[in-house]
Length: 85
Image (cartoon, rainbow, N blue to C red; front, side, top):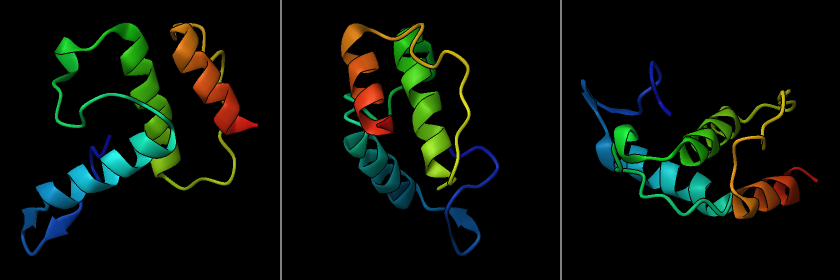
C-alpha cells in the first residue's frame, strides 16, 4: 500500500506508523485483513480490497474505478458501495 511513499523516522521506515495508518484505513473501509499479512496469503478479493484502500490512502478527491467490486465477496462489495455513496 505504501510502495514508494513509506512513512519514515529519520533514515528508517516507520513500521509502527505504517501499521497504524493502514489499520485506520482498513477500519474506515470495514476491511477485516491484518495489515501485516503477506500478499501471497490473500485471496483475489482481499487483494482488490487492499487496492481500493490504497486509492483512499492518497486522500484523492476523485477516484475513478473500472468494475471495482467485480472480484469482491458480497460483504466486501457491500461495504465498498456503502463507503462510496
